[in-house]
Length: 204
Length: 213
Length: 152
Image (cartoon, rainbow over all chains, first blue to last red; front, side, top):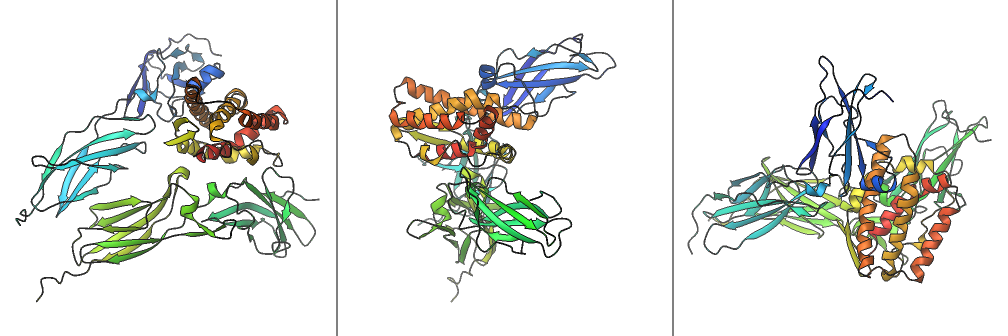
């Protein structure tokens, strides 16, 4: 093991939004030199049953950036310990460990991006593509007093999908929220978006 | 003595589609055309290897083991012994085979029926070679509890109409008469992360003759 | 998410995520198991054919076997396999914690049938040398996942 002369990385923290988890730390600076960082993790199982075992992260063993996308490593809804160390040639710093273990169920879920359009009498929506773990609950209603709210589940984003065959001349409003099955949580609703369909309402 | 050499035999594996389980292999780099092959199979956890009738001393390089590996809850192995005219032989075994895990799903059989302002789609059940105790053939729907169909109708390349569910009949409504649409229907089995290639139908809605005198 | 009804103990778990993870390492781990005449998780001790009331107990004991004796004793230099096994082990830990809650609420009773089946599983495991038993048990994770899948 190299002699620990390098200062250990400081200020480890995890930013997690929409199930994307980013570990960051303050860079270790040695003028004129490139520092490599090694990131390792330990799930609750490892810390309980084999605490000496740490697993090299998928993408950052090593990395030159003072950050690491640990999304592919955090694959269960348990507490994860994370640690980082710096190396420069044969010089190696001590490990720095994240102060508070991270659980993916603490991720911030943002309201999904939503585009509403129309094609003739078809009300079409396109939701933000957030990845396979996300489903969408879409609520829509006719913009008139006492209108009933309809609910539809949409499985994947990124693709324009017909929401409803609407009535000529009617105005519709739509809002959506995400749902992540793996952690059993959903986001807040997005702002409602309204469109008016072409054609005159048929008077009977 | 059976030599395990690459030059007589390689790539011994199952190819499975809708539970039709075919064992295939390739001859070796220097195999002579008169090399013959014999197939055996066994259930994982049991002792005996069983010879597959009809696939002993054959020259072709495939063998249908659908019946012998027909219990979807069991796991199997198969092995091939290649014997050259000169008496040299080699034996190779498959990986552990589970038809539930390994079988791929073929596209569904669908009838697309165009009308004036809608297109109806009727999905026909997909039978498999697997039979119940009383001899009835099982369908994919019998085997996979969470099987469902995903139907998409592509509207002038800009957006899709989307229907999904386990039932067999669907209708896309509110369409423009006398217009061509592209429909794609796939079978999806989430539990096993299986999805078939799509069945594709290109249909044109009928002209609207209601206003002609 | 799959809801497992184990008698009056009901839990949800992500079987598909676990199955996807295992499918990435299955061929490698099963190829290490050269004793193909023997099976640890045999049909006659299967979870789904156990009295519903005893399923929670049987599953809890089998998971404990995997967590205590299997995952931690499997050595591999391959980081990809290590990560997939970590993911499976931590998912199993989550299930075991849920079953623990059922146990605390007295909805996870251990009766004779379940204990008798578990003792058979344990004896099949212990008849093998330690390394062989660990490799075989890991290779049979697809059987265990299907057992869980088929509990109704």
